[in-house]
Image 1 (cartoon, rainbow, N blue to C red):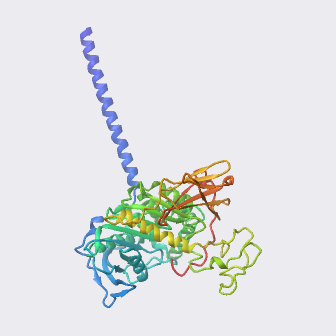
Image 2 (spheres, one colour):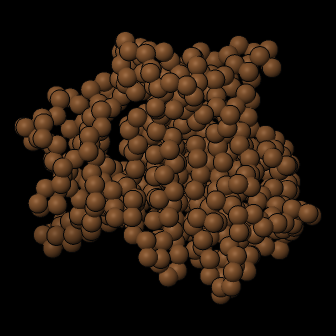
Length: 515
């Protein structure tokens, strides 16, 4: 072989090798994409047929005869509309709801709508839509989940929670999936009302309704604002701890095993239905897909959704306007929904209450605080009593969300303030916010968030706020800033190692009258 032939042969070989290498890289890149796509598919949340949910041709909305009246100055009536369920063959079900409309003369399609989603075992509530409508100047809709109230379908109850842990073969069999779809249908119903601005839809829900709120906001771009309350994602991480969510899962799997005469699984978290909930209906899987602005309101000691899981969910949420409001010394609203008033609580672990007559007798109001409790949080199971403050924060956050992120044009009520920054100094703690604020508070826990001491902070000349003492070593710090109209937002100190601080949960006691 001469030199010219050798050079030509070598060039062809190089070109061939380069082409093979390029094809190999392309194949490798394609393979990586396919693996990532498969992983994303596995890690994505459940798919919802939003076009089906938006269809008005089969909505078949009807007023319940004789239900329309004027109460507290607003027009309220009971309605039903069609939705779907998939347990067995797909079929149509009727969903019951209450709707309240503001009085007076105003342009068509000018009012925002607020959809309220109830918690576990709840149902549509007439008084809820009246209060929302009257106080927020919105069209309010409260629906009953499948099988609850007079809605058709199978009911999910606190005593029978099994329908929350089914759907490994088809996630549409899960009650929560059917509930979310009914909420999407409620949005469709609201958009058909002549008073409603169809592009001004807000959604709020408590507990399981809060989970449904996060899921719905992750799949439907018709939602302009969402306020989930007492709900977060990262469900498996929550259930791996001694939370009430774990207790519910254990109860459901034991009930299922008893009905089928089978041995319960050693680890209920490995039940296929439980896995289906974690994999397809965990709000964390919808966090990066949120459409409307999210304000998240939580008790800092929620027995279902621990603080770390709440923080993980909030950090994952999409949107620069998102806000977090943590309420220290408040849980899931369980014990003090109708419990002992703060004025009736003992003042120390040894001194009995001297509040006089009118206070419920023990065990509703204890005679003394347990030795390890921080007064006044020492009721049944060392409970918290901030029901009124929590409700007020919910109302103000919802007003702010609607005014600045939902209503068109925006209303003259400021958004919740930007989240504060906590500066831990050797001899003091400083709290600052980029927004206009009128007050700031610092909650400090030295027992891993079981109880907090709360402190009103002094305003400094530069607009920051000061706690003039060193923070206890390893303490959990939650700062709250209050805007001019009363809405709040919070932040937790970056030095607070919540993941390394094992949470404590109160025993699963008798449930309140309603969630």
